[in-house]
Length: 524
Image (cartoon, rainbow, N blue to C red):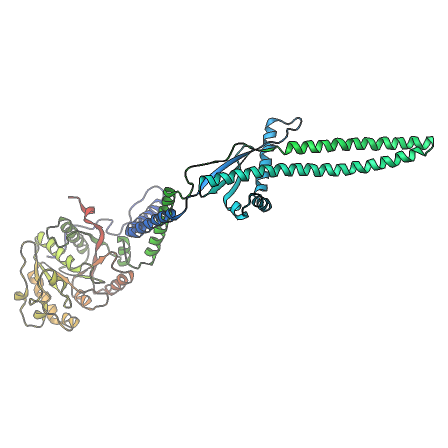
């Protein structure tokens, strides 16, 4: 009797691909999403800690900043209506003029002049004052910041008042300059008129008539210039009133900066993104294996069972663990029955220490006993005797003594009780375990055990760099590899699979620890 059962391997276990329907890319996208979600779950503490640090730093930064208040003032812009223009045309013209004024208010020269007038520095104005148009309205909004609402409001009022007066003065100055140019032309005409009048006084009748015509033409031109001067001054006066304060400056009582809640939320979001990025980088640099699919890809063998993380792994009555090892027993039996030969002697090994070999040997042995088999557990770890330590059998005669012929097999075997199998402890150990295990005596011991027991399960040291486990596996009917997610590295798994790929070994599959916790195995 061995691990063989009457079950046959299901299609999924036999390597058939699951069928898909609909969009062929959907499973790929789903797998990518699940892989990403698994990565986040695996690195959740990196994401949580970095997110919290982002929020804490944002809170600390915001708390150390001085309160900044803002005052606002509106300036209304109106252009003179042209004959035949509609109200909409006038509004559009006023909006265009407002945009022109905004550019002027942001000009360095204007800021320099304002700073001189207001007895402050250009930097104080440029760093605290901003101007912009109100959407779809002939209005200019000037925003000013300050340490207090009053300081912001006073500067906003002073700056807007200066802006209005400066624009008015500029229009009047332009009008006077234009009028001055026209007046110079008028004075030139007046001088020519005086010369012609003097010539007419001493001229004959024919010449006087010609001079009168010239004088009349010049006087007409001078009259037109006088009208243009009056029009320029009038236009300048009207344009000087095109910008006015719509309302006095007002300041809010609450600071606009720092915004504690907003800053903390932004800090948390930045921390979350940074945490996800760091988690992804950490995951890419991590050479250890973290998911079942990667285990199966690395070994080209199925996962026989997953053993969850439990609060009390030493509790013999833990139903979750018992169920996991029952699954392992049935799965191993299915695989064993699909191949040639019996699987009576099974070696349990792993790539690294601390992956759960001894626990697996005990769990599988108890499951086999519950199924009615006669089972022997052998501790072939002659270096550290992990199985013997777990069963409190350290110091007792065992495998070493039997192989050295200082004790017989029957007296060295510790009888089991209940669902605990018989156990052959490691014994005192040996200075050269591979030599002792690769002996005729060990083969004879296994032959003797085969005649007395249905199944023999052997615990070995890690087989990544130690030959003991490989030696024992070569004398066994089958090998089961124990893999602990997050502990075994990809190169470890590749190395041990390469060592077990010889026809001398029959690898049934893997038992994987750490794929979940006992809360995920709550079905009963």
